[in-house]
Image (tube, rainbow, N blue to C red; front, side, top):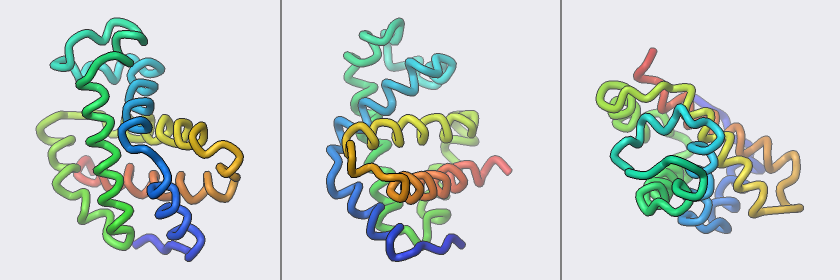
Length: 147
């Protein structure tokens, strides 16, 4: 079980209260699909993903980015029980979608970059550490079914 300091818990809740889920989710997933093009294979039903402009303008990418952020919100609300919160998602991504678990880490890195751009100077090293710890716990929970 993960131990959260008061600072980490407050910081994570503060970040998610300040960000626009639609914008951050869309930007993060777009960045992931552009920077790591092999991740596009999981989104073949999304239509045109041929270049950065097409990915950015794709409404299915935007919608799924929002879905990802709403999933993260569940973790914010269940920080002491993230593994069980994501148990069904882990099974879905492992057994049905066959997503390479390393892609969760890649998307987490993209989320960190986008959140940093949104928070600007408020994205201190301590804030980054708290966010990356939170996302690492989520990545681990999503990958649980694989191991």
